Image (tube, rainbow, N blue to C red):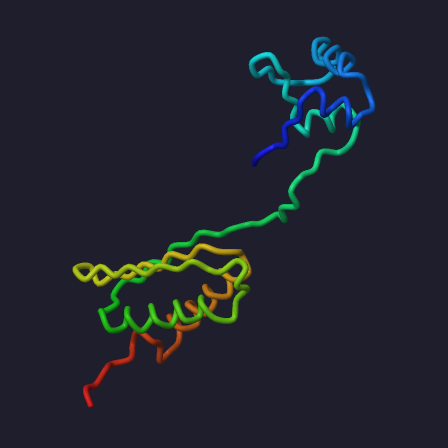
Length: 150
């Protein structure tokens, strides 16, 4: 974050004071400043502290982010591909595009193991985890389906 910096002269103009008064405030510690060469520079937040004004703070909404790893054992390549497509499609649709879910899938061919990594806000992550739970625990689940060549 960049903080606006003012010279002692600019601070004096803003406050309607003589520049010597501002320098006196700096030397006495009443006003924080950084000396650059022969000049003082005063941060806007330090000027606000001197005048009693609330410093301008960026309006950052409180956010929570969830990171989840779902491990699915006993999945073959076709089932992992189907499940990955379902999860990625769900993550990319019907969610707030301002804070999208980030999803990555990894399949380990040797162990027949799939991992799904989900990063996002708690509500969207919970919704995706509920979808995964429903698909994985269904009697005719996505992983149980056999693929027949036509």
